[in-house]
Length: 407
Image 1 (cartoon, rainbow, N blue to C red):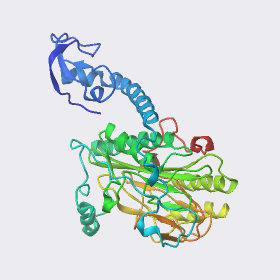
Image 2: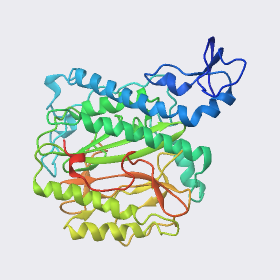
Image 3: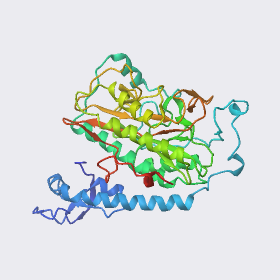
Image 4: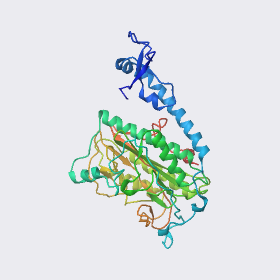
């Protein structure tokens, strides 16, 4: 909730229906949330009236966000493909010309880096030439215990996660046969700006784009380029938003067009692996134990679990403690406690668990060229279990529904 309003010059009727103030017809405080949405501004005669009306007034913000999303989707459809130079769509970058790829996917050229308006607050690495997060480096050497979030700070984490959810949903709607990964990056970039968010991946250790798009054998950290998504591809879209000094992180794997039975099995398995891990998230659970459950589920589907990359603490920092490995018999430290905020994001392969990294220094792919799938949520541990901060509003419980990931 925002509990302060900027002052405007002209008076309006107070939007608190129970206002009894002498200034009822001279309200000069505008709701800042209404100003950010395609809604008629609401005005209040005092902070007292604003707070008194908040529980009912905030309901219109949800309608405003739905209208905003619909307008944005229409604009994206109208602009689809306008910025794609045809001669660059399938041209290999220089590093890839003599590279020995493990699978069939090939990189394409990238568009220029997109800019961020100056009014949007940035994390510390956003403008650093190296992209190094000095706050994360300091945190690693401090030896501090796992941070617990509560109160207003937790609310800011929740807001970042909610914004990430909205952005990923828009990116998923834009995904279809023939769209480029660069177009998905544009959708994410502009959706973040519309929500006054900074896209956390941008310039993080020099990552050049605002989102990760990982196609087929790409496990994670795929860089959006002019690759055109094909019928039968599986595509993971990984979104992280930074707003209010906090990050929110989530991803989903989408099935595009006619995905074969093995691909469908893999995506469903990755979802089940995350689902089974989140069911264990509660006070007293050892972080290392999640990997045992995930590995058991993956093996039951003849799939493997990537060991190189893991879930992580998140909030005021993009990546922090705890580490949350997804494979069995790992040696992660720590016990879940109320207020801990972290991601769970098992990466599941159809073949071997081993990975290699392309010479772009980011794109992680399966060593044997088999396909990989992943789902991710950010959660907070509560007194009795966990809350999925990046869940859709209409999905309080994780249930596999292939239609929601079919494009």
